[in-house]
Amino acid sequence: MSYFRQWIQTEAAGATNKDMLEVKAEVEAKLAESQRQVFLKYLDPRGAYMSLAETIVGVGIDALVSGAGAIIDLMRQRSKEKQKQGLRWQAFILQARATVSDV
Image 1 (cartoon, helix red, strand yellow):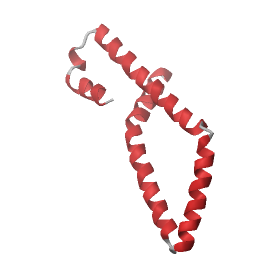
Image 2: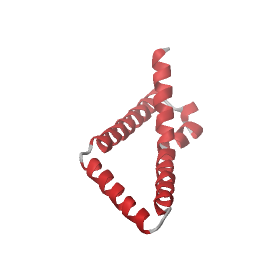
Image 3: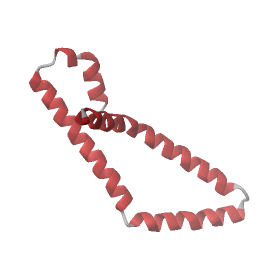
Image 4: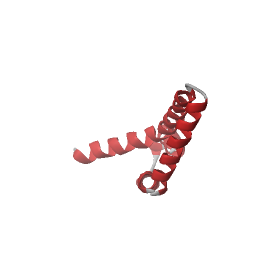
């Protein structure tokens, strides 16, 4: 996606129709792959087991050190927020594409 942003800023104005179609195909393929990865992540049956294990470990740690569970939750939340930042550009492109398709 960083290549796409750079291409838009520097070369899109003078690009040929063929170049634009190639970039469009690359962006669409990347978006489809990102969507597939997100869907597979949430449909993975191992996720339920991992979530249960994390909860049990968290309860155990919190029993040993009071308040440790809250600190661990804050660290996980921050980590998830960083992952979301990487997906914001793809979300923007998906939303823009849907808006253009509706027009």
